[in-house]
Image (tube, rainbow, N blue to C red; front, top):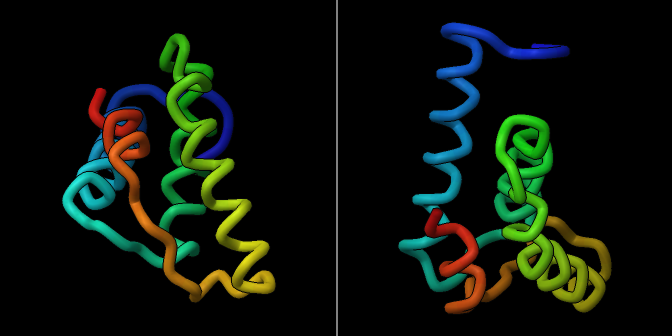
Length: 90
């Protein structure tokens, strides 16, 4: 999918973003790779969702810090804090 999304493509993209957020809310820890994917979905949604950028920055910062501690290993685990859960509950 490239460019603007309409109809079924927009619906599918919206579902993927919502599902990614739900996965994170219910877990205490998640692989950095999964968190990076969720951040990617949220970044991709910025043009369609007003003010979305404000809701992924803490997760992105936490991911970067954890990735540095894991020496760049995306298979490492990171804590999903209450702040991150709150940011994903929209």
